[in-house]
Each structure stands twice: as structure tokens, then as C-alpha cells.
Amino acid sequence: MHGKMLIAYFSASPSRRTEQVAHRIADVIGADLYEIVPAVPYTQDDLNWNDEKSRTSTEMRDPNSRPALGGAPIDLAPYNVIFVGFPIWWYVAPHIINTFLESHDLTGKIIVPFVTSGGSSMGQTTVHLRPSAEGALMKEGRRFEMGETPMAINSWIAALGI
Image: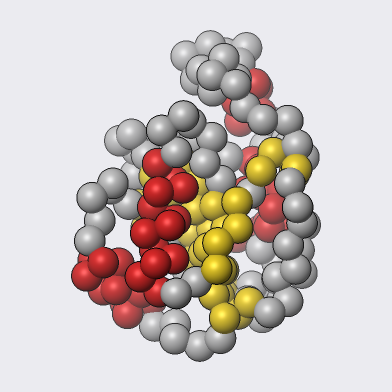
């Protein structure tokens, strides 16, 4: 393991599953935590993927959509490895993840995505995120279940070779 590590995560649903997984990973590897917060929080109606007029449906149909960030900004300079966690939306990362990555100089950083999902796999998520992480090495991501053990997390970290 080299350098200081950060777990940056976006968790929009009331269940906060991605936040729970982020905390579990941070506890296991001793990383700092940072929540990626939208400038305008998502409501339950916004998150209704069955409604083609919902905010998330509209954002995800537009590949250039970049929802604004809210919350306190973070300086990524001290971090060598940045884990980025989010729920899978329409088989890719929510566009606020692109906003977050594109808002920072990631030159020389290692980016490791991790996701939560009700059933979707990672699919092409990592491939679609790479252009937003210019200058960084983006590792292949991993989908997490709620009951991940510290041993499973350690095995994943070891396999990343970081």
C-alpha cells in the first residue's frame, strides 16, 4: 500500500448503502472519508428511475450532464490512491462522479471505483469513467454486497496491487 488513501463516495438513496460500504472499506484499510454531495440534493422523486421525466432519468440520458457539487471542497493533493464509490445508475456511474473527477487534477493518482447496486453489474462503468480521470491510472472497479467481510475487502485490495 503506498501513500495516503481517500474514500470519496456518493450515496443518494435513503438506505445509504454506498456510504455503509465506504465506511467499511475505510475501516479496513485506514483511509480518510469524503462524501461527494450534490449542490441540489436528490429527492425520492428525482431518484425514480421508472419516471422518464425524473431528474436522474434526464441527467443519465445526457452524457454531457454534470450535476454541480455542493458541500465542502477537498484538496486531493495529499492522496495517492482515491477510491470512488457510487451506486450504479443506468449501468454506469451517476454523472456527479464525472463532475467530481473532472473538478480535480488527478495526474499521477490511482483511482479505484467501487459500486453498489440492486442487481446490476459494473458493466462498462470503469471504461466510461476513464476519460473523466485524465492523468490518473484507473483500476478496474468492484461491485460490493452489503455483507462484505474485512477479509474479502483485504483480498480485493491485495489483488489491486496498490
